[in-house]
Picture 1: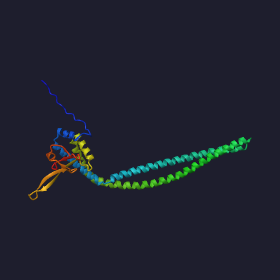
Picture 2 (picture 1 turned 30 degrees about the vertical axis):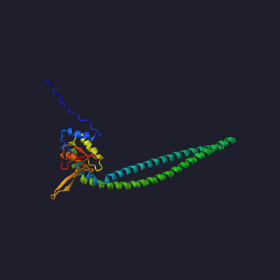
Picture 3 (picture 1 turned 45 degrees about the horizontal axis):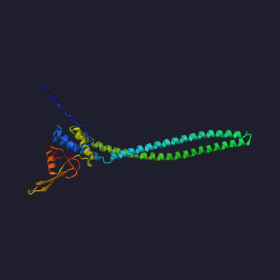
Picture 4 (picture 1 turned 60 degrees about the horizontal axis):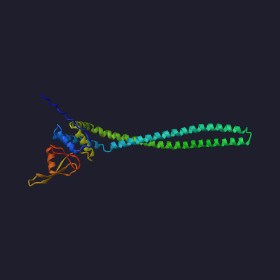
Length: 284
């Protein structure tokens, strides 16, 4: 007796560059009905729009907070670099002072030798050494003066930065308090919307969700799913209107009659040829 093997369909990996044709095919082959998937996508989009509106209430505050934090980090790093420079100058001064002590000892030694010279050649040699030691001492003193001047300049610069840090820390504290107040006031609503969004996302296969996120990311208004926009004309009967045509709710380009039928039926995934958004029946 022959036995039949059950064929298990293996889903292809998600490809960020996949065409809309392959996405439509994936829709058609899914165990979930196209109409149901479109409805879930529309609900997902609605949740995302609501979350975006809550985020919009925060205005530029998150960016301002981030910019202030970045500026403060930069100021503190600059202050640290100045402190390191000052430390370097202090080390230069210490080294120069030690050198002067050593040079003074050498100078004293050569001066004492002058009292016991025996010929002019030895006298010239010792005077030459004294001259060299004197030049080295002058250079060391110059290094000390310049290092001290540099330290004073750097300290003044560090004080200016410290004042600026205090001002920016106050600004950051105020901005954070303002942002926290807004976030706290919408936290409960945002949590509920996020839960709704997660529930919708869980109902959608990985390929479709990836395509949705990609379309949403490319759209200037972050709308990946839009409805048909109908244009009507008045009829002879008062209060009644007849459809003339329909357009994409994203880019407002006119939809052909056949594609309009496909969208209204909810049995086929239709993507706008102009803006790339998924178009659904407004009665979904």
